[in-house]
Length: 204
Ligand SMILES: Nc1ncnc2c1ncn2[C@@H]1O[C@H](COP(=O)(O)OP(=O)(O)O)[C@@H](O)[C@H]1O
Ligand SMILES: Nc1ncnc2c1ncn2[C@H]1C[C@H](O)[C@@H](COP(=O)(O)OP(=O)(O)O)O1
Ligand SMILES: [Mg+2]
Image (cartoon, rainbow, N blue to C red; front, side, top):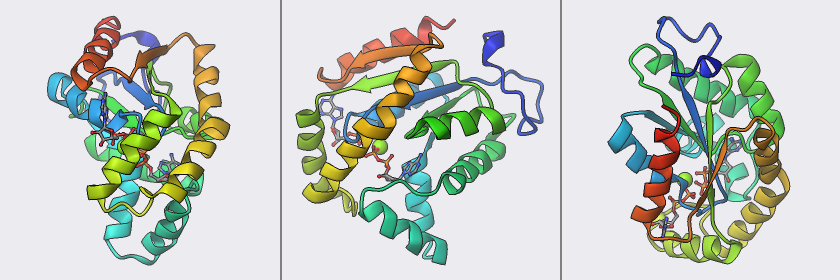
């Protein structure tokens, strides 16, 4: 584990160095698909901000109702809400995790800055890159079965716009740190994973 990757925060009770990998890419680019494969091969803890938020919605809480309304519009939920959820999920696994794979966060540069203040710096950013039209096609297909309130044409368009406006600058931010690996996600799933695994193995 590289020295520079070490989380320096009250989150960690163990002395073991922790690794943070961040997975970025537009909606429907294939982040969730690749994360599943990374978990199977490397045993990292996968934390998806979207999954954490959807779990809150499913709980039926008042907070969940507010979140659902925001997600349905394709907008970002407040930074503090999502960062607290990720932090709590990390604390729950601290000490037993081999490393964290964070999917869907940061969505804007400010989220990256706050993560580093409260938790630590990531050691690898996997940029899962697909064309806009590919993302739309995949999301429309996913929408046939996902039951997700945001997998419809109107919301998909808003999510893509927001991605280009707010989230792509995050990649520029981390490129200056030299931790970005861009992965072509137009390829078949297993080929994409070959490149993802190579990027992770290159860390060692
Ligand atoms: N490399 C790929 N080739 C074809 N389809 C893919 C690929 N990666 C993902 N998909 C499909 O695209 C959809 C969105 O993938 P998902 O992993 O949920 O994306 P994200 O988490 O980035 O929104 C899923 O239905 C998935 O099966
Ligand atoms: N880091 C974050 N900050 C604010 N809102 C977030 C967020 N992560 C997820 N959300 C909200 C807004 C997203 O449109 C919605 C679904 O996120 P997601 O499941 O990560 O989408 P996808 O995997 O299709 O890119 O949840
Ligand atoms: Mg996803």
